[in-house]
Structures are given as structure tokens and as C-alpha cells.
Amino acid sequence: MSAAPKIAQSPVSSRQEGRRSATTLRRDVKLSLCDGIGFALMVGLGETYIPAFVIAIGLGEVNSGLITTLPLLVGAMIQLAAPMMIGHFRSYRRWAVLCSSVQALTFIPLVIASFFGYLPAPALFLIAAIYWGTSMSMSAAWNSWIGAMTPPGIRTGFCATRNRWNQAFSMFGFLLGGWFLKGSQLSGKIWPFALVFGVSFLARGVSSWLMSKQTDFVPPRTNNKPMALSEIFGILKKHPKVIQLLFYFLCVQFAVYTSAPYFTAYLLKHIKFSYPDFAILTAAAFAGRVWIYPWLAKCGREHGTHALLWTGGVGICVIPLLWLFSANFWYLFVVELLTGFVWAAFELATVLMVFETMNNEVRIAALTFYNVANAIVISIASLLGASLLDVLSGKTRAYLLLFALSALARMLTIVVLRKVTREKTRWIPLAAYPLAAPLSRGFIYPFQKMRGWGTRKSRTSKFPPKKAA
Image 1 (cartoon, rainbow, N blue to C red):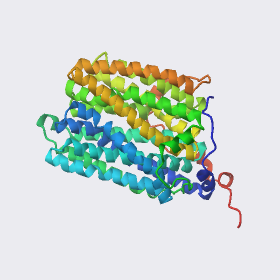
Image 2: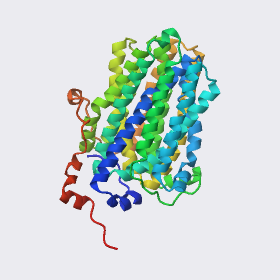
Image 3: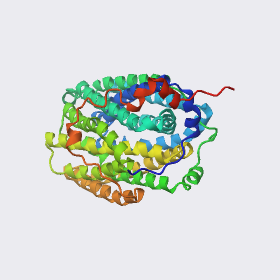
């Protein structure tokens, strides 16, 4: 069983873990699953339809791609102050709830713009920058919070199940958005987008409220000012494995975002899919993730996180090539289903690698650096893609060339992946078992190691009584 090198757990987790009862831990886990549902509905309904909204109000195909990439750069600069704010609030929960609440509020101007049918491009990019800036700013706090909240024994099952629920409700949100927008494409009406963004606002608001009800953890007193890049590099240079892992993730992001931001424009403007067809096709990728997560969690426990990373990392190299062969709806539906399978493996491996290779201090520094570097890489990649589309006047062959170049770039990332996982890694076959697994599996209460926590023996062994003062 291959596994990432271990680093000692955060002192926050070890110091405070024993203070929670088994009942409180179950409650935190359930609340986290539920707040993830609200987040997923926001992503499915709101975030994924922002590029379509850009096209609907006449800002063009290139802007529809750049709206999901360039604002990340501004957002990354904002999140450099996140470590200072976490230290100021002395709370992971407070900062995460504040960021998620502000993120919810960014949908209000989009609702208003949907009724007027117009929004200037600079204003739209500013709203998107705040949206992704708050998302990135809460990333380090949320990951450290979840790392402290979930004991290692249930973490793989928790991450897999939460991701599965998230993908399921993102898929539901996306289909619901397609239903809301049904007919608006032909009639030219923009106001149905107000329903899409309004429900997204409510979903994220409920998610923020549920987050506020979970057990808080106090971060160590380490950061009382914005984290400078020199400070980040000073922390990361002591952990070369972490640097290799982050470099691999950045390479993947560059390869993916040369083409991914323009897939929406390709489907809506060149293949001429309707909003419902677009929703169903994109939801297929979510369905693939939902379907395979329970099996991936089992394989992750048996074969290790590196096996998941290899399966997903190699699988995503093939996807853009499959887009080249046909524009038939049902063919693309199957391709998107397969896309969900391989991205589920990659995403689950990413989350687990962050927890397994980084303690609290390294995690905050690494995620802060990664968010900045990731935004820069994505912006450069999307601008390269936009340049190619502009040179070829946005013709269909330009999109196909873009997909082919993205596939080539993804294949080159395997060279970096080999250095991240030097030891012999066992492959996970995407064979008959996960395809035949019942869809309901994994939606029930998922943590088998938690079943016995109600007994006196398990509570005593897991949470020993505090010594008398």
C-alpha cells in the first residue's frame, strides 16, 4: 500500500480532539455534509452558469472563458491576507463563515443585472473577483478546520462521501438551472438568470449558517500579519515533497485551463446545444463522480492515495482527445461520464494528499502560495487559449486544436507525477465493479468506524476522560 510521507498532525487537532464527545463529532460531520450541499447547489446553479450569463448579455465567447480565470488572479492577491485574518479572529470558523457569507452576497448584483439584461464587463469581472477571492481566502481556514475536525480514521470516508454528496447536488443544481433557463435561449430573455442566481444566494446563505453551528477550533498564534511570499518560501523549502506536489498540481492546472474555460462557448455557440441539453451533458460529469466515489474511497483505503493520484492523473490526459471525434450529444454524454470518473479519483487524491503531507503550518503556507500561483497559471493558460481563438477567429477548428494542445500538455504532466510518486504505485482499474455498484451506496451514513462509537468501550478508547485538575 503506497502512501504519502506523514507529517505530525496539527497541535490544534491533537489538543482539542479529546474535548469532543462522539455525539458532537457525529453532529459536526452531519452539519459539514449539509453545509456542503448548500455549497454544491450554489456551484451547480450559480458558478457554472456565469459563463453562459456572459454570453447571454452579449459580452462574447472569449469573455465567457476569461470570467472564470482572470478574476482568480485578483482573488489570489486578496487571500494573501487570510493568515492574518485567521490569527485576528482566533477562529477558523469565524473567518470561513464570513468569507462564505460575502460570497453569497456577490449573487445579489447578478440577480439585479438579470432583470435589466445588462452589466458592464468591468463590473462583472469585479464581482467575479470578489466571489473567487472569498472562496480562496477561506480555503486555508476551511482545510485546517476540517483537518482538525475529522480524526484520521474516518477522514478518507468523510472526504469521499462529502465530495459525493457535493457532486450529486451540483448535478441537481445544474439540471435545475437548465430547467429555469429553458426557452430563454430562443426568446432572448435574460430574467430567468435571476432565478438561477437568487437560489444560489439562498443556498450559500444556508451553507454559511450551517457552518456557524459546527465546533470551532482555535488556530495557533503564528500569523498576525499578511503572509509575505518570502515567509511562505521559507516554510516550504523545508518540505521538498510538498513543493513537488504543488508543482505537479500547477502543471495540471495549466494544461487543463488552456481549453476548459472555452468548453461552454464551444457547446452553446458552435455545437448549438440548448440550455437543457447543455445542463444534461455537463451534469453527466457530476453523475460520474457521484457514481464512483464509494468505490474510490474503498480503493483509497486498500491501495493508498498515490494509486488514486495516478489513476486520475493519467485518466484526465485522455479526455480532451475524446472531444475531437464527434459532436454527437450521446457520444459527448458518455465522454462526460468518463470525465467524472477520472476527475473524481484526482480530486479525492488531491484532498487526501493535502492532509497526509502537510501539518497545520505547512498547509496554510502551501495553500496560500498555491492559490496565488494557481491563479497566475490559470490566467496565463486561459489567455493563451483566448489568443488562439482570436487568431483563428473563434472557428470550430480553433476549439478542436485547443483541445488537442491541452491533451498534449496534460500528457507531459506525467513526467512530473513520476517524481511525486517515486515508489511503485498500484493502479486502480476502472472496470466492471464501479460501473455496476448501486447508486445508493455511500449516501447512507458512511463512516463504518463510527458505528461502534455509541458504546462505552469505544468512547473510552477514542475519547479518554480528562484528568482532574
